[in-house]
Image 1 (spheres, helix red, strand yellow):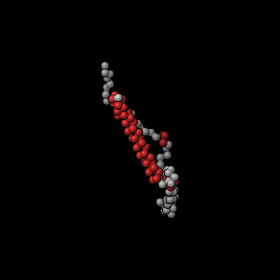
Image 2 (cartoon, one colour):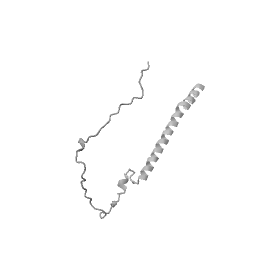
Image 3 (tube, helix red, strand yellow):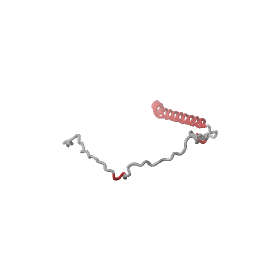
Image 4 (cartoon, helix red, strand yellow):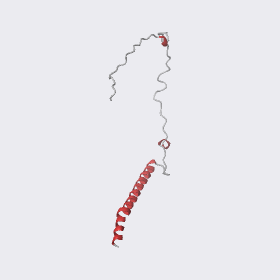
Length: 109
């Protein structure tokens, strides 16, 4: 009788009580997440509880142009006479530098 009572107490302390505590923690986390998402839905302003984009809620007003159409006019561009040779035929002198080696490589054995 005494051994069965001791086994029952050990079972309760090491098995049943941690399971109950785990279920309580899971239930609290679910309730907290549900409250968070309910607050988000209420903040979105949709009476049905859904999410709507901000662009759908308030249409953007048409912005006026910053520059008045009467300020300025079309500018006609002119070709400026310059070097008439094509770009591919330019004589450009290019110097090729030797590669600089900082370290001599040596295999470690």
